[in-house]
Image 1 (cartoon, rainbow, N blue to C red):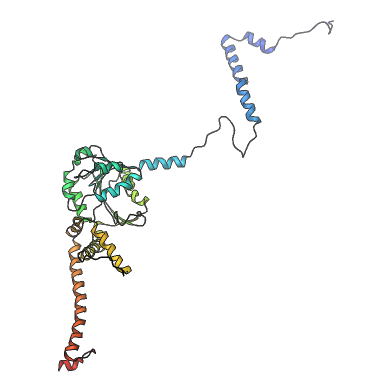
Image 2: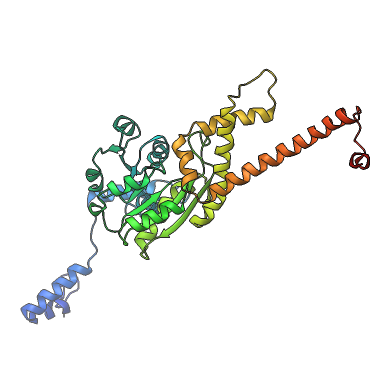
Length: 364
């Protein structure tokens, strides 16, 4: 009989017994599983940080875990990427008064600007952040997304034919901003390769009329030829978006419709302004509002070159008809005035009375 106070019975541990009889590979596998199943003890530094985080009070439900996902503004990022894709490399051909006027807004919107003109506008181009090229070959080798034709109407054909378009990418977008539309449309379609895109536009404003911004001013455009490709359609929309962002009233119409309307809205306005300028009108101490409107009309129309006015006449087939109507209207007004004057003279000569003559007695 064994005494419980002096003896201890030790039975073999079943796991240890099995481990002794396992083959080497099985034993190694068991050790690996045991190690993987055992909980990992954190280091002292990690334990300290975790303790501080547990002790820190939570404010407003903010997640304080070390591996919490950081906030990311996907909407702003997407908007930024879209705006970056809409930035264009625009070559302005004809960097005169109107070309410079457009360039200032293009630059403010972040577009890359190239410029070319017959005169040296290098300093003015630099002032708006545009790269100036005296040689059109150098300009075309920069491969702009858009070539903007901003020349005078009279010089448009000669300037276009001087451009080495074979140095451009074969699907380059050409845009004109001339004040007539059927003429440049036919010119671009006949002069450019068939793979080039063409949009004819007319901003119905200029440096004088838009000195306070473009908001609400009409911008006419005709997508004459835009390739059926997502990238080319997106490029066309990105260019038109320049004017839409400035608040322009976007008016899509054919070139023929534009010229029919422009003969009245533009050519007539310029004609009346230049006729009044020939009268050498001056401000007076008793100006009326209507007279001041006429003086402003003279200033607005005569600030443009005569070449522009001449182009409005020569390259819009509706202008001749309008001049004939204007002449007829002037003759009609004069006839009405002189007819009234003749009535007064007849009264004085034959009746000596200011009253209307008796037609029956006159016929006798």
